[in-house]
Image (cartoon, rainbow, N blue to C red; front, side):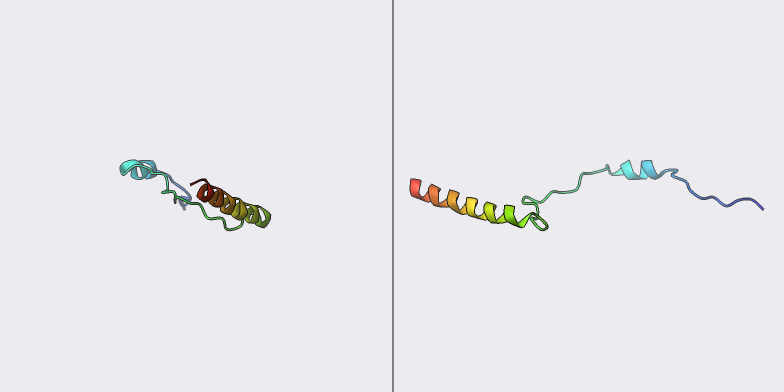
Length: 58
């Protein structure tokens, strides 16, 4: 008895490029989930300070 086919990649590349391989759409702001908490606290305070300084300059 003949051995059965285990794998083939025939035509897959053509099918993939038929409509073009596109990069995934990126969101404007990446999620900060899983980021170092110490960094996030500092970031929050830095942004708040920048906003206050901008308001004071006006």
